Length: 140
Image 1 (tube, rainbow, N blue to C red):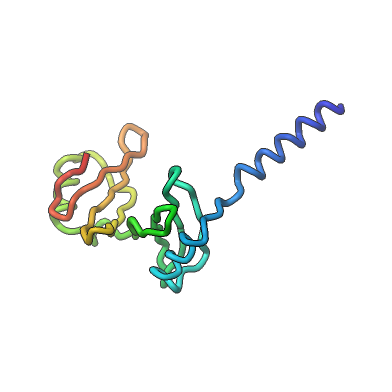
Image 2 (image 1 turned 90 degrees about the vertical axis):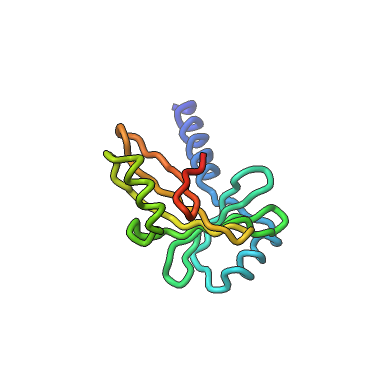
């Protein structure tokens, strides 16, 4: 009985630690506030050793933004309706994935001023993501 109790406590502690939200450095939090002063419901995730992603609401829209660990903005991803994508992107997807239905779409604004678009779709019972440039070229 004692072993069972100890095992259950260890599992509970592990679950709590795993679900705990990542804390971003102050420079990263400040950068988010500078770019999105109205951001609410912010959740931070560490993407890798030098990058953080914030998921948040901004003006009623769910968004995410990535920053370096020094607070330099990298990109912002905003969900959009598939029909809001540029015609070149929609046509490229439809032509290359004829039997697939888009699940979701996003516009990604990059630090260099360019945009790319992400389409998530289901094929063979698996979810896939594909990226396109503004002119409909697939990004590998």
